[in-house]
Image (cartoon, rainbow, N blue to C red; front, top):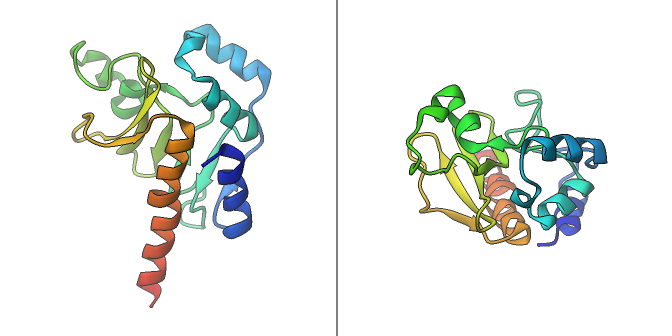
Length: 165
């Protein structure tokens, strides 16, 4: 699913449940690139962030920041650091996610993430209990948005409807 289609569907099909925040500013991209090599960020991810620099899914009174979030560029950082804080820096070099891979999303409980493989620009679902490469989430941002739509937008909507009936 194209980035603009994903964002428009959130706004049109499910108003009030999700928040699409303002686009990425050039200054924030420059700050981020001062810390990380620019080639770590695929162009298609930057294009998505230029449409919305943070998306909050399933926003409500109990979860004002959203149940699940696509992080803004200033929040995107080493997956190890985001997933395990400073303890992630002590992981062996061969452990997944690799030190230079980036967390691009976050679940409200702080245990589930979408991680960007900065070498191949692929996305993986990972959690803090067992990070591995068994759960691919997309080979580019379009596939990632398809995955998120099915798992976190439509999937959660179906689950909530089931509970209400």
